[in-house]
Picture (tube, rainbow over the protein chains, first blue to last red):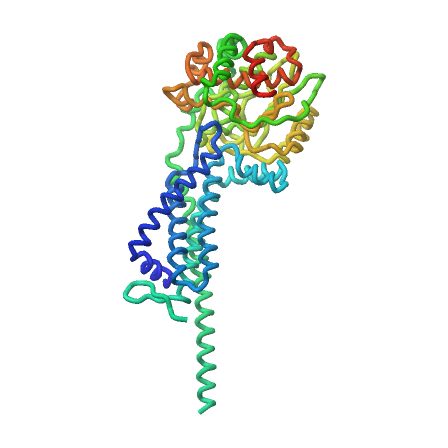
Length: 170
Length: 322
């Protein structure tokens, strides 16, 4: 469980814990904002359990924290940036999925913009309505898997010394 | 000496390769393991997240019961003065949750020489449940309902008290109902309702599914209606309605509260009482939502029905550009 050791070492830093807390709030607000964009005339009825929304915000925040803190530890900025983008994307999709209650106005607008038709939009809506909880859970698992992968690859560029992550010299 | 060094380097490379292979295998195994645990634990976790099973039968009291004559009269015989007053309230911006849907335009689907009102919804959908009240009020200005039925949105989607156009197949896993007991000399009403288990949450099928169902049903009006919805590329979800020339992708008014309680906590009797004597945000919003639909139909047919002469309806047509 090398990745877990790296995780522990990374989150020994108060800065990492603080940034995770701040990002968690940020991602939660982002998810709620996207849910509200789907609202009809200001009314929001969310069937996704609140605990899953918190979990998604938290796992996205962890992923972003790992990405940001590993910029100074990793030799591949591209990889860290991609992971940061992934954390934003999973939150955005989470908001869209949680906000899907009878309709997907934002997603539909995007799909029509890309010349997709009503048959495709309705198929997507049908799929999301059938598997809303599963899809939302999948985004959380995806965040965890990307975090795990990222922590595993850190072993290429850094090591643990006195319980803290230290960048290896090239 | 050189040979020994070469052998050592070769062994080192082999060792590194073996370590990499082991790492790849162990990472893959771990990922598969996590996924397996997630899949295995999912039914338990989702069961815990979903909370206790809904009290089926209690909150669905009277489901599919035809409305009594008194209840039906609340819809069919509503006073035009209520529509006028609600329309004026909408026009002077005292009702905040009316007119949010972005309306677009198409050609009316004309059947038997009359323009059509097309509705695509789902019995499980909370917004459809809330919106049917305003729809029924609007339709009652152009004709009469012979029967309506006591209904609810799905238990997992708000359990909103509503009316059904026709008896719901609330225990079926997937079906579609077409039609209602509505007559009008001005318009056709073509409701298409997706049916699923009411104990679950919101469910709907794709447009091609509804086209197939309409084909199987064999009624030309519904075949044309579903084909029109497929061609328009404005579908975003349910409820989806077309009022003559005007497409409304969603509910045109959201009346989820009367200021004191939400529609989820109201009984059917309370809703009939509020609509019979409108005096709060819920009832006026329902009438104003109906006014918007009425204005759309009026503009689609040259304002010939008597209801179109109400000043508020003409005002809405003017302001909304219908």
